[in-house]
Length: 62
Image 1 (cartoon, one colour):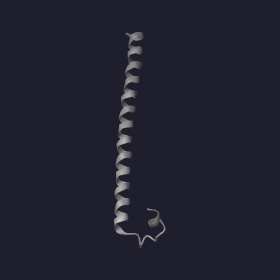
Image 2 (image 1 turned 135 degrees about the vertical axis):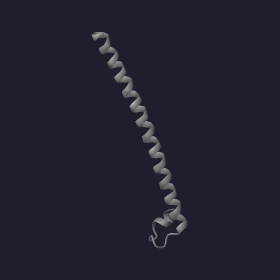
Image 3 (image 1 turned 90 degrees about the vertical axis):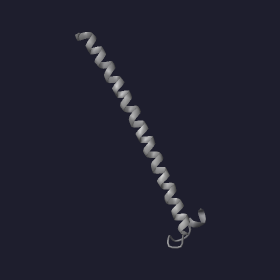
Image 4 (image 1 turned 45 degrees about the vertical axis):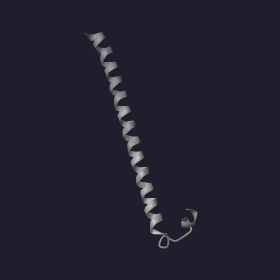
């Protein structure tokens, strides 16, 4: 791979460019899945906090 880094982009083999593109697409998909999983966890935890707060308020004002 270091050999291809030293070449002008017009000389780099197309197979290498395709491989790099494929790797970048995989990285993007993994990052998107990680983001979505973290968003789901955050949403669930925030909902739990909201439910706890609501339950405490209901105890005092019920």
